[in-house]
Image (cartoon, helix red, strand yellow):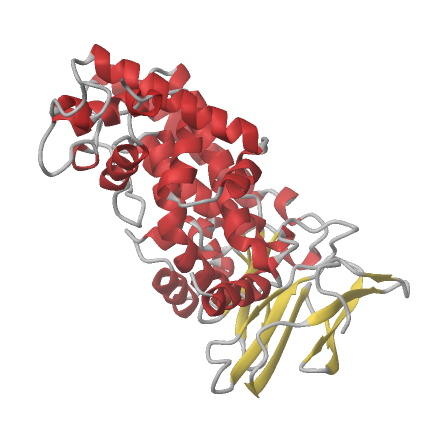
Length: 237
Length: 191
């Protein structure tokens, strides 16, 4: 008599087949497309490229992406181009051909949208850049920075932290963008309350020899005296 | 995974959800193998669409981490995010009849050539995406029935039913390709 279960493909066989085809732990990248050949393909390709360039120029020169960020709302000029140190830092964080390029914010930047918004002592140039995912990013010289969704009244600031050696004690940096009308950003780090003034729509805080990796109790304080808590997921301790 | 390992991943998830970019990178490196393989198998290993889906699943996780409420549940959450992405792409690809598929031969053929395993893989790729997802989550990702139900947003009963349905369909498809339902039967051990 045939057991009913034996009439079906076994779970073990199905499992081992799936294991065989599961493949490597990194996704593959599509190879670059071959150069288009022939007039009939060149024409639509040219139209598409012109349209894309037009759209890119529109985004780069338009202020839409920088609505509410006065320091970035100016026509792009030569001084807005990322300096070589920042560019090198970003390229180092997002080398071609690595899987990281797909989920690291640095790998989605629209470099040609960059606006220089100011110079902060010990950090150098500060840039604001849009990315292909619709986020806004702030970078300071060397390529460190943060990205976040576009600013709004409920989220008037972006917020990111980094500490490259929190175990041994490294420099903790918190930074982000702030919309027009935000006077300062406050948060707690390592149990201490910190107020960071906003200058040119950017705020940056650094703390040497720190074991901190994040901050809590983040609030944006507006010129009119009101306060917005944009990150309820970072409650006050 | 040990309790200590789970706690370490949860700590990374907690830090990543609070904006720590270093922790996010470490967390993604930790989750990447299971996310990539699960997504790839649900969409159809060997197609560029599957590789794209795996990348997009990692991107979804990277972007959604700030909304993670329970860091201890980060693995289940990541599998749910990846499965949702994979199912969306698998359904689209099914409509396109795999127009963009068949490009990565090393992920289509096992090292020992074609035969029964290749036929089973081909049959698997022709299953409805939800049945594929159920089988991959249970058998390859190693999720429990409860975890699989959570990832798919269905009941445990539906998970059991999906897996049984998948095996029935695979058996029929293997039969159509000239193979017995089980290896034992093929070897003549079943009478």
